[in-house]
Amino acid sequence: MAKIVFLPLPEAGHIHATFGLAKQLASRGHEIGYMAPPDGEAFLRHQPWPFTPILEDVLPRGYQAELHSRLADPDLTPAAHRELTREFIRRRGERNRQILFGSAFESRLRDSGADLLLVDATFTLPALAAHKVGIPAFQLCTNLALHRDAAVPPLTSHHIPTGQLRSQLRIRFSWEWLYLHTFMPGGERMRAPVREFYRRHPDASPGDFHAHLQIGPHLNVPTLVTCTPGFDFPRASGGIHYLGPCVDRERTEPPLPPELASGDAPLILCSLGSHGDRVRAHRHFFQAVIDAVARRPQWRLLMAVGGQVGTDGFGPLPPNVTVVDRVPQLTALKRASVMITHGGLNSVKECICLGVPMIVYPLVFDQPGNAARVVHHGLGLRGDIRQASVERVGAQLDEVLGNSAYRTRVQTLQRDFLEADGSSLGARTLEQFLQHPETRATPRHQRAAT
Image (tube, rainbow, N blue to C red; front, side, top):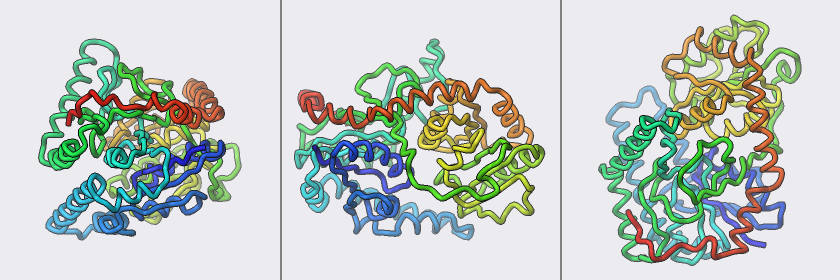
C-alpha cells in the first residue's frame, strides 16, 4: 500500500473534487494526506485525512476570505483596488519562488513520506519541486485536460469542434492566441523562475507553456482527468488518463427545506457555484429565473444566491420559489428535474451522476468549454448570462422539461459515469502506475521548452 498526498488549490471546488478519488484509494488500503495553504483546511474539516499547511507566511489563514470580501466592497476605490491587485501579484510571485526554491516547502515534501503526489493541474510548480526530493508527482485535473490539443479548443472557448477546416483553423488560432499571452508581462513573471529552476535542475520533468488555465508549465508527467472520455470531445493528443468522475455521492449534506423535500411538482435547481455570488451583476439573472418560474406555478424553484447577493434582495417571493444562500447540491439533485448551473465541472458531473439535464450559463475559466460539451452531447442547453431575460429563461425551461430526450441522453452518460466510479477506475489506474514505475518515467532526453 502507498501513501498518496494531494496538493490542491485551497478552494472548495478544487478540494471537494478530490474526495471521490481519495475515498476510492482509502477503501483499498492506501494512506491519504493533503497539503495546501492554511485556507484549504476548512474544506477538509469533516474528512478523516491529515492536513499539512504550507506557505503560511505568504498565504496566511484567512487571506482569501479577506481578499474576496474587500474586492466585493461596493465602496472600494480604484486606487485601493489597484493596491489589492499589486499585493496579490506580489504574494503569488513569492509563493511561486518558495515552491520552486524554498527550503521550507522542500522540507515539508520530504517529511510527508509520500510515495506519490497528486498535484493540482492548475498549479503545477509543486510537481517540479517534488523532483528535488525524488517523489513522483502527477498532474490531477479536477477540470478537463488543460494542454494544447489540435482537435479540441481551449476550455475558455464556446466553440464546438466540427472537424471541418474552418473549425480546425479556429481551434489553432485560439491556442496560438493563448500562447502569445504567456509572453506578456504577467506570463514572463511566471516564466522567469521556471527557467531558473530548469537551469538548476536540467533533468527535471520537461514542460511547456502551450496550455491554459495553468500557473506554471504543463509537464510531461501523467495527466489524470477526473471524468470519462464520453463527456469530453475526442482528442488528438495522448498521455491523458481518465479516472472516471470520482464524484463523492455519499457525502453528508443537510436536508432540503421541508416544503421541497417531497411532492410531485418538477423541481428546478439554480446555482452558480462557489464563485457565482461574487459578481453583483448576477442579481438580474437570478431575478429573471424567479420571474420565469413565477409564471409557471406548476413548478418549484430552489435557488442558491450566495452571501454577497443575499436572500433578501428580491422582494416578496412567489409561493413556488425558495431562495437560500447555499444549497445541499447532491440532496437537491436527487429531487431535481433540471439544474440551471454555471457549468463548473463538479456541478456538471453531479448532474450527470444523478441523471439531471442542465441549462448552463457559463461565467469564467473552464465553464464555456464544459457548456459546449453539454450542448454537443445533448445533455441540455446553454445561455448567455448577459442576455438572460424572463422570456429566454422560461423558453429554455419549457424546452428541457418538455423534451424527454435530454434526460434520456443524460441517463446514457450516467451509466458510463456510475460504472467507472463503481469499479474504482481512478484508484485502479493509480495502482497500475505505482506497480509499474517504468510507465511514469520521464524521458530525460527531452529538453524543457519553457
